Amino acid sequence: MTFHLTQADPDFLYKLALLLAAPAPPGAPGHVIARAPFLPGTGPYMISGYRPGASFTLVRNPHFRQWSYAAQPAGYPDIIRFEYVADPRRQLSAVTAGRADLVDLLTNGQPSRDLGLRYPARLHSSLRTDVNYVFLNTRQPPFNNVLVRQAINYAIDRARIVSLFGLAPGQAAVTCQVLPADFPGHQPYCPYTAGVSNGTWHGPDLAKARRLVQASHTTNVPVTVWGWSGDAGTGAYLAGLLTGLGYRAALHTASLSDFFNAASSPDGKVQIGLFSFGPDFPSPSTFFVSALSCLSAGQSPAGANFAHYCSPGVDKLSSQAQAAELTDPAAARALWARVDRAVTDEAPWAPVFDSSWTVFVSARVGNCQVHASYGPLLDQMWVR
Image (cartoon, rainbow, N blue to C red):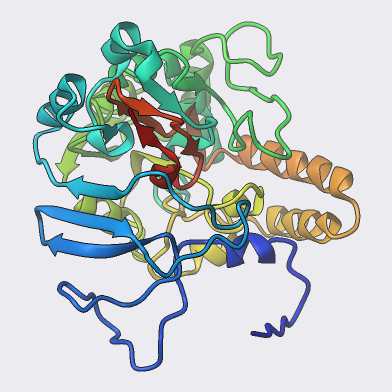
């Protein structure tokens, strides 16, 4: 297979490794296959059973031969079975009692602080590369005014939002900037803090926030905060915060799917809400091209650019950083740090905390590894 690129792409190998698509045989249907026969695969496992809304089972592929441990290692379990359990509390109790072996806390939505205290050896996390942020729609009043966006960044109590989510120790770290601490190009930067600005968030500065709001002449503007069923009460917190800053704030709660569809709609009517972004691969371009660029703002739907943010100057700097990656990685990281600082200053997001992909496993699970983008590596685990 030969790929012909129209221009150099430093992220090309990362993109080839994405799970978003895979080769399929000629004549494969262009729709979801809900029953056997399933499509053949080349990995160590194959589908042996699927019950929609109930279970999904993988068994060893008898035709698989490991050709490279680094690229596609053989798996340890003989059977991997996914079971759908609607109640998040029943999911946790099943793993606690050993009736199941793993629950993904990223999708479970229950507070994990108590699990971390009771079963610290059974919680496993990836690097903290997911950024949880409040998006501020740069096309809608009052957030089309940079002073207001900066005011929200000063006013938000990041530690309180982490507490609302009930995250386990080490699972989250407060932040003021886009690039996570464990990411290429990251240099500590936090202008939105009380006390000394030394790259670390020390607490909210409400007095500074109120001064910026007054300078913007936007008080009494109506603002609708969008919340969703799993946002741990942060929607209500944001509505109260905006009311305290002088806006006529109201809360609208929707399902997660309705929230996403509305926030990514090209009409750009959702003013503010809390969401998260996880990079597909370890390159800053995933943030500043996929989620915070004029290209992503012009897409329909807008994808991850809920702020509808577009800065030609930042895009130009991002292009320079991408070009430098091909010949001078150190210079590229320095340029990405400048991009990160510029976007943080323009404040289309109010970054709140970086979080990890975390799973809770039964007492018999060994060799648990969690990838920052793809989650638990189920085929590399074993059970005793």
